[in-house]
Image (cartoon, rainbow, N blue to C red):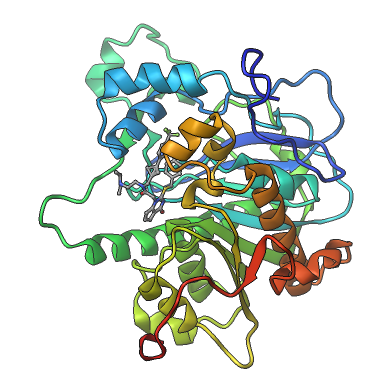
Length: 401
Ligand SMILES: CCN(CC)CCN(C[C@]12C[C@](c3ccc(C(F)(F)F)cc3)(C1)C2)C(=O)Cn1c(SCc2ccc(F)cc2)nc(=O)c2c1C=CC2
């Protein structure tokens, strides 16, 4: 894993019994379509190679915008630091069907995009899940792209006069991160975005449902993946939503809107974008897996509003973690840069993500009714580990609850 020169850095390989494949899907091709990276159990292959972790340089430009640093400078820095990393999965490898796979829809955080949580998504796929990591078009992603039809004038002077494939008639458009304008209040924007994000998760689920039924797909992206191999491969009674930060709020909004999501796992959720009025309307189990450094009383007290005597709501905190302990960046820099940029906490990043992944799998087995051995990690759901805290380290005043 990782690139030659920094042999000790790289995204940790998945631990489950299945090799992991990944491919990209976009349908329809517009900004209103569904765009996700699919991670899935694949057949052993020595042909497929591992795709670049960041698919193209526009993502680095978007990341610079998000971090309010100069694009030219940052593109070189990001390329130097991260340009050669591969993700722990085989591009377009053939799907391996062994019974129906449970499904996870994954939602990224503010300023992230679909490829940055591969340690989590690949792990779930190696354990037998089909995972769709959505790329949101609500302008919360650092960057994302879609296509539009060529205009008549563009067609007129396009080289390929008799443009053969539909793809030739499409032009790639980039959408970049939209920062909060000076003086603009945060909630209206974030609330609108979380609703769009939930709709995009539901749309991705609808697309997977179509694919599972064998409906032919016109993937706007030219991939070598055979989508018909996924016919009847998904267990559409076993669907969960998982997300990080803004994606954690998206999980709660999606559970509220779509009962097909049987449970949700919110990784270091950012609760600001959510309306108070949705809390009593969420009926599914939720698991909050928090970092030690990111959370604060107001955010925790909103999670507590979801406490219920009848619906299982669980919370644990991983000691020594920071907000960035969940995305892949945490594995990709040395210790001192990582700590300086708050990409690493005190705990070993691979131990932290392993605890998070195992607790996630145990919760998924419990609430999706899986017949696997993930229940071996049940104690983690209750924080029973030296590196876990049951509930939170944050002091929440009684009045705030
Ligand atoms: C000054 C910018 N200001 C914007 C509002 C705050 C920026 N910020 C802290 C950052 C992300 C940081 C980051 C990334 C990546 C490198 C790199 F160098 F490794 F590339 C470095 C440093 C900059 C740590 C966050 O937003 C934290 N955060 C996140 S971070 C999700 C993410 C984004 C980009 C990634 F590449 C990976 C993961 N997702 C959320 O949903 C929420 C929050 C806060 C509230 C809700």
